[in-house]
Length: 123
Image (tube, rainbow, N blue to C red; front, side, top):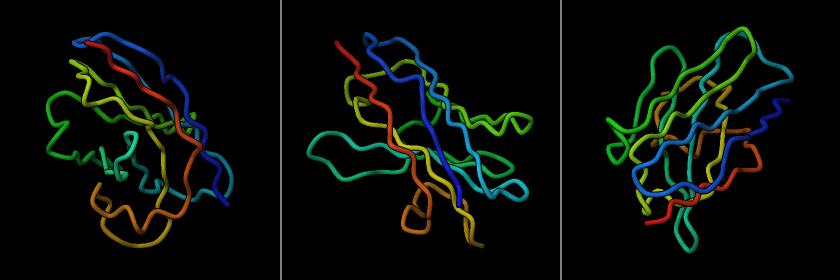
């Protein structure tokens, strides 16, 4: 069992920056694949980025978002810059504990999910 808790969401103006955090706890062995996903109102959930050893990003956020992790505190971070209104969504942290590709397009394989944190970008 893995527990995930996100934090850091809020409101920001277009062009601004925001950093999200995800704390993982429970039965974790080694450096598991973790990722960020987002869902805008009325839209399907989509992958943002994932990381086990090195991060992988969706094309829509490359160059603007950075995923990092703190192994000592078992945290995953999402640093977002140059935010746009189209980035407005609920952002979810997820963990993949089975073998497989650690990639944002592999959403169906992620077993554990946090409750989400809201990010709102105003123009």
